Length: 235
Image (cartoon, rainbow, N blue to C red; front, side, top):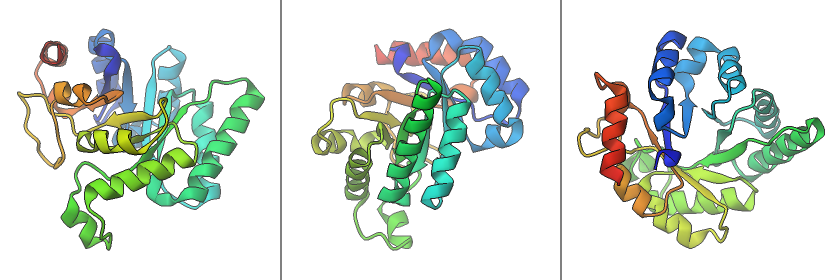
């Protein structure tokens, strides 16, 4: 089950991240670096981690004009990350252009292409959140539509809450399409600002490929023990 766990390194310093990695690297498949740590430690820290053989999911959620996102995607590929994401709300041209340019670059340099995921609807959002920004679809419908569009544009998968796993599987006719789910809260944790949450065991039983866990582990006095507890809970 450890092969399904991505630990979110949502900490403010490189030193804290390194300490956590040393403590728990044998209990997870990969580590996620998001906006906080990337802003604090920079791309060179990402390169250090990938050069040491760690699998890194770079979670920067690119959302800009197609040319800008595609060029950013190429720079991410140069870092050797395992996976990165773009906002599916950026549209078809943005996603297709990113896939095309990253693929071409990696082929020309004989590099392994990183997995590219489309971010659907954040797990902190719900129907009311979508209504506030002018989206009239339900959360489930919006996620399903964005997942189908992501698949059509050649992305490797999507980031979505565990509540939409079945809907995505029923709608996307690709066996290799990945679903990565944040909003994972083990039985001993609280939801906090996440609204569409589920336990690790429930998400895995629904067919998720990877679960992203952050605060329930990072806020524990013993992150290693927290992960061990999560693995027991899953099994």
